Amino acid sequence: MIVVGIIAIFAALMFGVNSQTYGASATNVSDQLSADLNVCKMRAVSTRRWTRCEVTPNTFTMMQWHLTGMQVPLVGGTCPPDCWQVVSVDNVGAGVAIWDGNNTVCVTSPCALAPASANTALQFDIDFRPDGSSTGGTIYVADPGKNKTYRVVVYKATGSSYARNSW
Image (cartoon, rainbow, N blue to C red; front, top):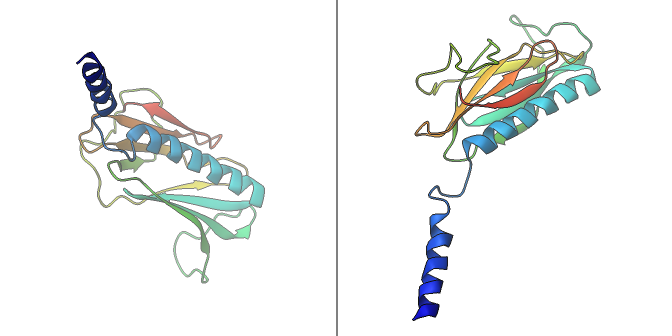
């Protein structure tokens, strides 16, 4: 009887450790997003090309400009085929979404422009220049219940990105 009781306690501990299903968490997604943004910066510096990181609610796409140098990429007008070449695409795991992004660098919490609801039409771009600087901004990551919230801050002058707890 004692052995069965001990096994039952161990079984309860094994199943009760984590109530969330396995998969992505807001912490992991914000850390991965920060790492991907740092790779964008390093790629821009090492290839001497502008590198664009496009963030949507469920994907992260890294692209590079087809020309080398500091010349600013075309914003409008005609662009030759393949001006932005896709380098990689990462998917955000199930159970977490990138809620929003804006060009304001929010270093301290609470952020004035933090989203109240998820932006399902989000397409936010951060450009990294060949000198390592960026257009900067803040990207907001949360789980569906908004129990865990993180923000990824990208600094303009250095292009460095960091994951921060809460908005």
